[in-house]
Amino acid sequence: MADTITGLTPLPPRLSPVAGLFAETLSDAPAGLTIAARVMDQVQIDCRPDRIESIALPLPAPGRAVSVDGLRLLSLAPGRWMALSAGSTDLMALLRECCGAAVLVDQSHGRTSLRLSGPRARDVLASGTGIDLHPRAFAEDRVASTALFHVPVTLDRRLGTATFDLHMARGYAHSLAERLIAAGRQYGVAVVL
Image (cartoon, rainbow, N blue to C red; front, side, top):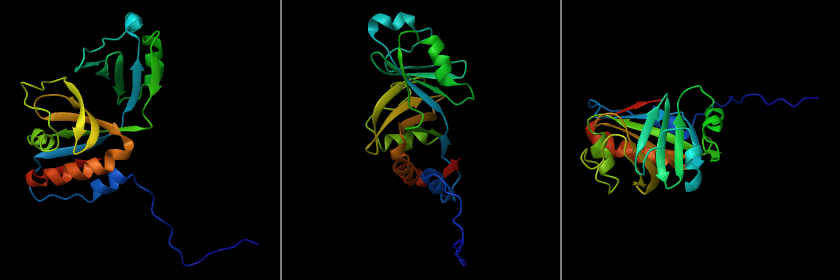
């Protein structure tokens, strides 16, 4: 005999905390800041200095990033890089072919990314970090690990003067998105899922 419960409404499909936050964000002002959630494969590459020659990729210098064939490489520390891809390519398989003696650690399940763009992106970021984000000090393809509104992030300056990617542990995404939306409201915020 099966038990049946009547009168209960099924729960709606569960959304990620960031998606729910983004769905509630409204702005009356024209958008000076756009925040976009990004789905990316992220693989950490670790290699001893004496084996770096075995890596067949254009590894960026410290504090730098480089893009090649849909792949973004960030320098995180001496002997450590992060490879990012938003494409459908199997990033881990590609890196196994290119990285010789390096250790590869898939971070996709534990990290997430947000993209900030627009004429006020730099102003919003500057209100939450101590890094000098002026284009003379933090030019295109620069990378820094820092705290943004007390959340540890890897900040990646992308195209032009107004696009930044933020990479962080997944558990911090909701808190950081809330802070970015609050800081950007004075300029108008547009949110893209």
